[in-house]
Length: 122
Image (cartoon, rainbow, N blue to C red; front, side, top):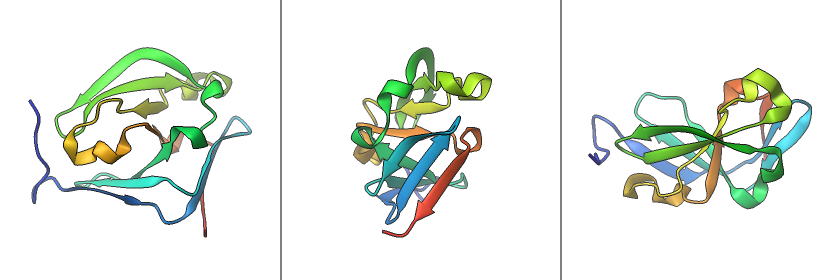
């Protein structure tokens, strides 16, 4: 069942407006001036990065999946060099629902599993 965002569950997708650098296990895994920020209801904002700004070679697709009635089905990746905390630490919505359609071909990270997520002025 697909649900549409509204007053009770708002979702916005906007340009981040900053350069964002993500590091894990001592390496830069993403560096982008074109990231999007998704704000959903009362959840913490999440940055989504264009695939071309992510070191995809550092990721390994897993069989894990999750479902959100507002966003769709998420596929997951691990960051093997990060060990246990890198397992399923990265996700994508390959066929996102309309509310977040701009995130197609974008990658998101669990910030609390990264070494750092640094926001820098453009």
